[in-house]
Image 1 (cartoon, helix red, strand yellow):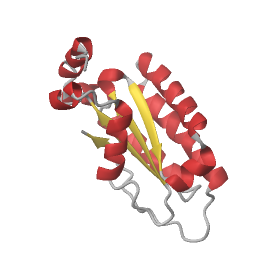
Image 2 (cartoon, one colour; image 1 turned 135 degrees about the horizontal axis):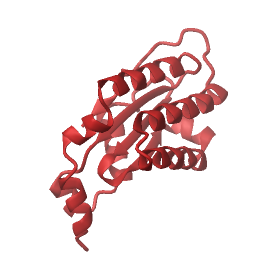
Image 3 (tube, rainbow, N blue to C red; image 1 turned 180 degrees about the vertical axis):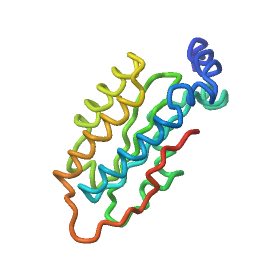
Image 4 (cartoon, rainbow, N blue to C red; image 1 turned 90 degrees about the horizontal axis):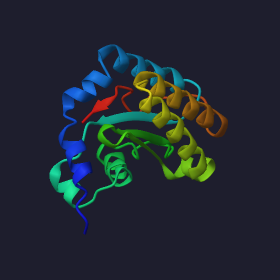
Length: 167
């Protein structure tokens, strides 16, 4: 196993307050509103989670942003929706990497290429320091995909919180 010292330093030097700096209260409210608005047009459930950096044991084990996103998909219970229609957008700020994890019902219809393209556009916005804009644009794109494949069918309950999660 190779220890990635630059990555460990990036994660160590990206404390929780850096997340709050990138996502102040107004940005978190805008993201929450974007999720709420998006979910009116489809039966999907979107969660956004952001984490400054991984803990040292995770870094030493070589945990990737994808592995962490899958873990959070479970821990945040994004999988626990009536129609298997949960989507997690996960940002690991220290790596400036976005991962989208979609429930099997959605992923089967949308596919990995669409998620990768959205992640790429969000990451570009983050490189430019446009954090709120990158997330809200990603939510809109995901919402458009979900509206195409999972339009509302009658009652459309909100099964998961729309509030962003800061880890």
